[in-house]
Image (cartoon, rainbow, N blue to C red; front, side):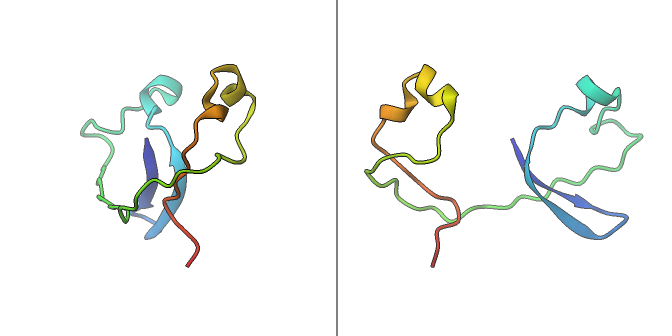
Length: 79
């Protein structure tokens, strides 16, 4: 899972969850020599997982029983 991409021509970071599937959908491979690709590592703060109900889950969570798991975590907690 790619959390963000940096646009070298516009010099800006594009954030959000993105899957690297350029070859599958566009026919372009982001990792061959034709496209300049630069991977930038962005480590997240490491926080302990807290016991508690998971909120905001969709229908898939109910189908595979993930809604009953008693843990919750946040990458960007409110400070």
